Amino acid sequence: MLRNRESRRVFDVMVHVGRPAGDRDSFVVRAQDIPAMDAALRIDVVSSLVAQTGDGAVHAWLTRPGQPHPHDLDLEWLSAARVAFGVHGRVLAGFHAITRAGWLDVRTGERRVWKRLRL
Image 1 (cartoon, rainbow, N blue to C red):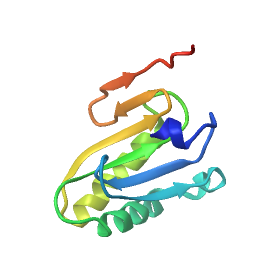
Image 2: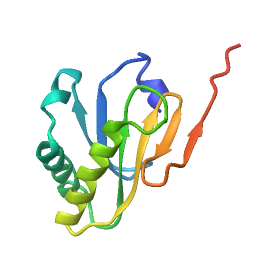
Image 3: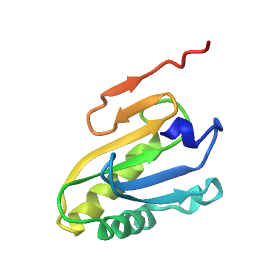
Image 4: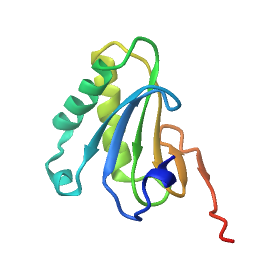
């Protein structure tokens, strides 16, 4: 879905909370706002998204440019997600970074990369 929605190689980071194949709420982090996104603001953003989801375990994930390798942004948002989910007494079922080239499970380091076939 990311490839269908986003054709640019460089695009704004989005934070999502919900079910990957179901309902979710999202927040766009504009490139010019990244320097202002400190730990407290990231926690507030994720906390707001968690508060809007239904009961039960839900996932959090980033869609971002680049390759599915660990990135500082992944760890910063994972930390915020852990705190926000804890504040709400919710279970963080998973935290992933999704790129146009694959995905990364930020907690375990597992990743999948796919190649784009050109015909």
